[in-house]
Image (cartoon, rainbow, N blue to C red; front, side, top):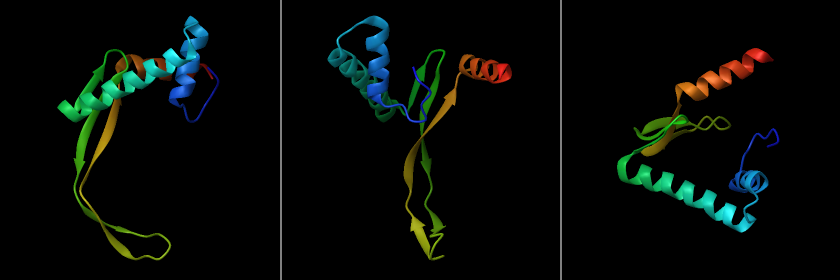
Length: 102
């Protein structure tokens, strides 16, 4: 895979296609299905753990007062849900060992 700042489902599907030779349409469907399972898990339980990768979880953010940086006008930002991700120890170890080699 090339060095990308933004990885789309099509980049992931293309990597699967190149690695395993599966039809591209099937690879796109596979990636979409995996992402749908993650979203469904977050909706149902608020937490999805992928072994040796990390944990996605839903958090509630309280409403707060924000400020438009251009006009300095204060605006109420409503309460909302956000997704957080905590990388597994294996992912962090891999990232730190890769960074140390540079």
